[in-house]
Image (cartoon, rainbow, N blue to C red; front, side, top):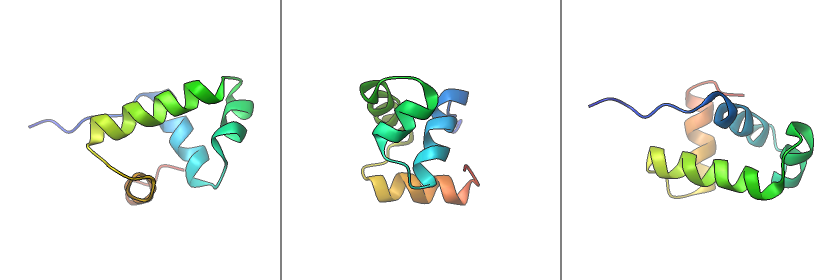
Amino acid sequence: MKRPTLTERQQEVLALLVKGNTMREVAAILKITPRTVAFHKYRMMSALKISSNAKLIRYAIKRRIG
């Protein structure tokens, strides 16, 4: 079974979150709305079947995203 992959934009969002930025800060850096950041985060968590922020950050660190 193929592992889900993240889009380039999702990886950008995740990298900024891993660095400790808030969703509002990520939005400002990427020039998108905080709601769009939340949507990217939701889609990542759904695709990866991850249920918490901590697990999402752990996923990113393991894969050296950010």
